[in-house]
Image (cartoon, rainbow, N blue to C red; front, side, top):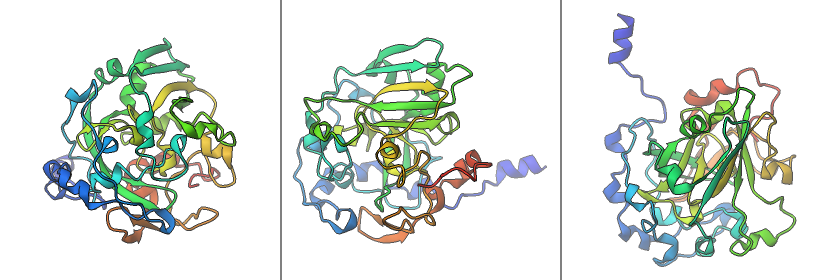
Length: 328
């Protein structure tokens, strides 16, 4: 009887809303919204409005026929969708500059051909063309919160596949405990690589438990179309319970390893950035609070939620790890 009751009564999690309340795709893809301009920048800066152009162009690549994909109604949030123009023109991508207005510069990146290397502790290390890889994967759309360590937040519909599908494809050996990921390094298109004080290439990592958690996603599209370059084309990581710097862009390599990777920001400044980087409003960055976040759509300040609102999915991963620096 209890099983029948559980099947009939589904308890809604605190961050969920009914699918009918999520912004319909026809609305968030409405290109008239592009003319509404760009949100204010983090820490008080204001981004200028940008016209329609190459930074907003989507749906022209060799995998454009795959989109849009069906939305998974299990993943939605209690916030309005961020306007597409804002999400596509307010970006951190240090390979193209240490500011938010890199969307035009990022168009220089070459994304075809794009080869993905899978190596380390796997049955058969391989290199595979991105298009061949993505066409093997179960694509779907998920609406997720996104929270930057700088204190701004957005809500966007990602298209892609569960990272567990990639792990299953890679067939890691039993000794694999982590997945290390690496961003492309194109010296001819990425002016930020000339900033020698950064530990290029950009590297990030997850534990196997994190990588195979149902929330972890390899995103290949956004707003119902292919991923634009400034958002991490052709494939990027999305882990919505972590700060945005963990969500590595434009990945060219997945290495399965038994040693915990030292990520880009951790290597740059280990006193401010740790490996785990889970969202926690009660643990401030050494130079600013994380208690509030500013919504990219309207600049409204709202309370930050533990694990960015996804604790029901991920808190169990970190049980018994009280001595780890989990939250920054």
